[in-house]
Amino acid sequence: MIDGRHEIKEEDESVCNLKPIFKTIYETQNKAKLPIFQGILPETIPFILYSSATAGPYFTYGTTPASTSLFRTCFFCIEDLMDSVVSLSLLRPIDIEGNYLDTIHIPYRLEKTNIKVIVCIQEFSGIQCISPKLIDRQSIIVEQKC
Image 1: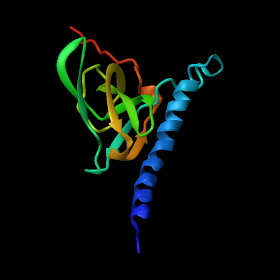
Image 2 (image 1 turned 90 degrees about the vertical axis):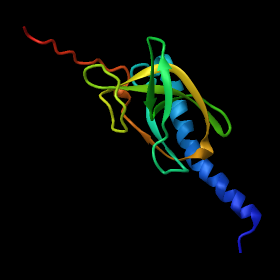
Image 3 (image 1 turned 180 degrees about the horizontal axis):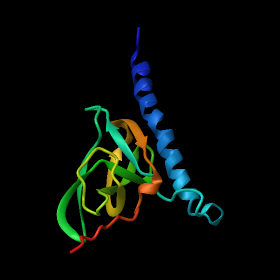
């Protein structure tokens, strides 16, 4: 038999499964700011979150100051970590030519934004870290010949 305490414990364990991952990412980003680790550890570790409700990637929307057009993204980085909630910055996916890209696939680069969302860790079932080298990577601009 399963009593009420056991069910609560299972729910807490599912939260605890992702919390150490968030904590590791957050601590690594903070260590990267120390002089001894500058240039060695990435200051921003991008990732995709997977929703518990849909088992698919978690998407949200934002706008950038340079553009009033809305963009959709499933790429994030951690800004702050509290008990069971996390503050995330939205990362804008960009293609090789420097254009916004609405995709679940890993883009050519990710652009940092100042847009933040606060979410409950319990809403997510998985996290997929992606290469920090994608952050603010230079676009390739090909000029047409006349």
